[in-house]
Each structure stands twice: as structure tokens, then as C-alpha cells.
Image 1 (tube, rainbow, N blue to C red):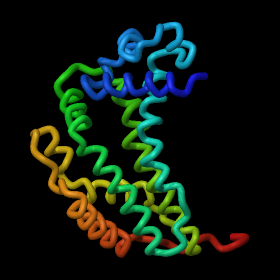
Image 2: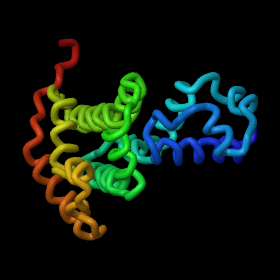
Image 3: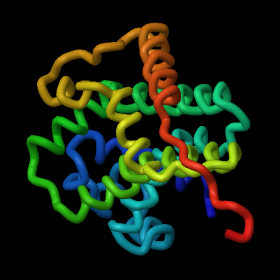
Length: 205
């Protein structure tokens, strides 16, 4: 496989997706935009759904990778969460992503496409944060019984009303990197201080 050709295809698919939402992502459009034949495209991804899944996974991977750790202590957990949330906010407040969300809201889209993007994007982010919280709890001999709920609450605290600002075409609250990071450190420290951990299972219990 030609890695450069794969990268060109995913880049073209990403551009189409951001311009008009998943409705714009057709095999014909991607082949034309990337300068490859449809036969070449189909050899790599058998259908449009496979291409969409690959694209969302490709976009999410660098962000989710920051959560693949086992925090040994509270400070390590804070650093991991701040790093992840900083990447997340930078991603969702970029002009291209803002235009994408506005296009999704304004143009007809297939519900199945939106659900697939939801599961591979936002929902996977919640799942990965929840898994990180569980690993942190286990490291301390405890459990985080409400990890999915805690994870979603944390992401909501970090993002605030920025998604609403996107839809109303308002600028994000924290545009400067220093202000954004200061906000995230404040959010994460408050979150970790209130994180509910329960006793872990006793050996043989």
C-alpha cells in the first residue's frame, strides 16, 4: 500500500466532510478530490461507510492517544486530563470544525452517518476518559463506579457553552492558548477533587 496515497485520500475526505458534513462524502467525490481512481479507492476501503469510519478514527487517534496511560498519582491524572481536554478544545474550536458543525446543523444528513460519527468521536472520547478514570482508581485500590457519568460531566465542564457558541456563530470563550489552559487546569482540579472513588474488591471476594 502507498502510505502517501492513503494520506492524500484521507485528506481529501476530511476536506469534503468539513465543508458539508457527511452528506458530501461520496466515493466519487473523494476519488475526484484526491486524484485517484475509484478502483484504487475501493481497493483500500470497500464502501463509503468503511471510509467514513477510517476517517473519523484517523482524526480521533492523536487526541485519544493522550489518554492511554495509567496515572500513578493525582498530579499525573490532572496532567493527562488537561492535555486531552486542551487538544479537544483546540480541535472543536478550529474554524474548519466550526463550519462543519454549522453545515451539519443546516444541511440534510443521513442519521446513520451522524450516529457513526458520534460513536467513533464524542462517545469514544467519553469512553476513553471513563477508562482512564477506572485505571486511576484501580491504581489506588479503588473503583470509579460512575466513570462514564463522571467522564461526560468533565467534558461538559471543560467545553461549557462552546458548542452553542459555534451554532450561534460566536467566538469561543477561551481563544488564547494560555487562557484556555488556565481554564482547563481550574476545571480539572475541581473535578479531580470531587471525584467519587469507592473501595475496590477484596482479593478472593
